[in-house]
Length: 81
Image 1 (cartoon, rainbow, N blue to C red):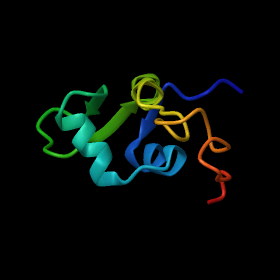
Image 2: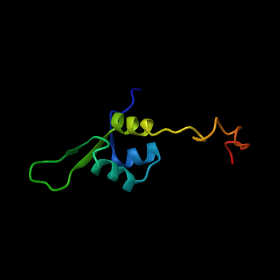
Image 3: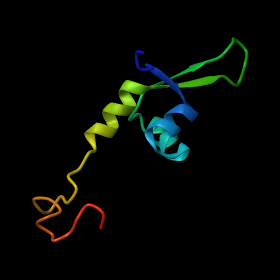
C-alpha cells in the first residue's frame, strides 16, 4: 500500500508523535505545507497536512544521540539512560 500524501491533523499528530499545538505552530510559521478544503461560503473545512513536508521537516532536525560526543559509549551511558 502506498503511503498517504496528505494527512488529516489527527493522523499527522498520531502517526508522527507530535502534539497538535506543535503541528499548528509549524503550519503558522510556514515550516510545513497544508491545504484547507472547504465549500464555497463555509467558514470551516478540512485541513490536510502534506506528509512529505512534515517528514522532511522532522528529518531536517534529526540530531545524533549525544551531539557533543561520539555516541552513548563515549559518555559512559547507554541509550536507555
